[in-house]
Structure formats: C-alpha cells, structure tokens
Image (tube, rainbow, N blue to C red; front, side):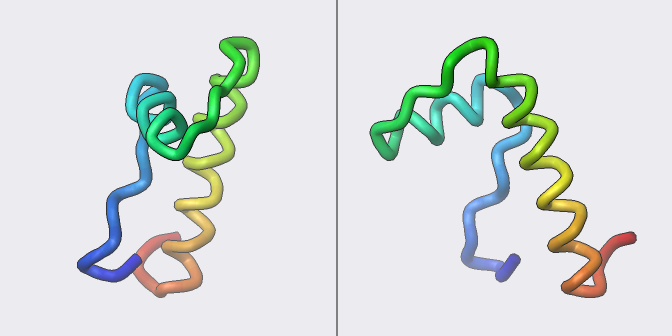
Length: 53
C-alpha cells in the first residue's frame, strides 16, 4: 500500500461504512467472512510488498 492509499478497514463498522460509501450493502451473515478475507488479503499484500510475513 502506498502512503497516499486509504488504510484497509478492519472492523465490522469500518467495513460496513466503506461499503456504504460506494453503494454496497454487506449482509450481516456475510460480514465476519468479509472481515476475515480483508485481513487475509492485507497479510498477503504485505508479504508481496516485503513489509510483512
């Protein structure tokens, strides 16, 4: 992630707000999976950037 990019939302509230900001609604039953997938994708991106792992 570059210094100008928005941080990846981590909490259910932040994820729901980010989704709402672009006109999406995440069903409540799906929200835990979205949280887990965003955390996994962020971890993979950090490995690719060489900043995590």
